[in-house]
Amino acid sequence: MKTVLVVHAGCVFAMTGILWLVQLLVYPTMAIVAGPNYSEYQAFHVTRITPVVGPTMLLELATAVVLVLPGTVGVERASWWSPAFAWGCLAATGAVFAATALWSVPRHNILAHGFDAAAHQALVSSNLVRTLVWSAHSVLCGVWLHRAIAD
Image (cartoon, rainbow, N blue to C red; front, top):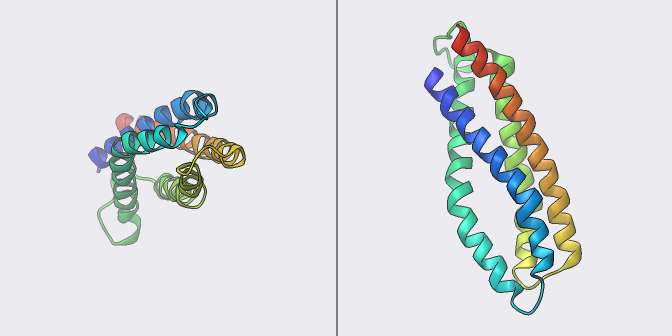
């Protein structure tokens, strides 16, 4: 189970870094490159970022589900395992998946047809929520990893 926690935390740490980079650099750049070729830029962004974040997010979700198993299906619990940490990780992962599906993807779909200032601003704002959730999740994972390693 510690390996699952390490993989989960690694995914969360990676996504936190990626999301801060996207929040501070990539999404603001979209407003600068707005113009007749913006649709090409948007397609390039989505095509290049999806293979990076997609597998990482799916692995994060899978490991979050596995981490709650000791409390739900009778899997033997290690002394470091905590239901609060496990369910907190699953909740944070669920929150970012929901925000991605409900906020980010629809905004990217609008932007695929050309730059739209309102959709761009909504994308930046909603991404800040995802970035903050992933950041809080990183803290949670860091504390849990520390507890697991100390055990």
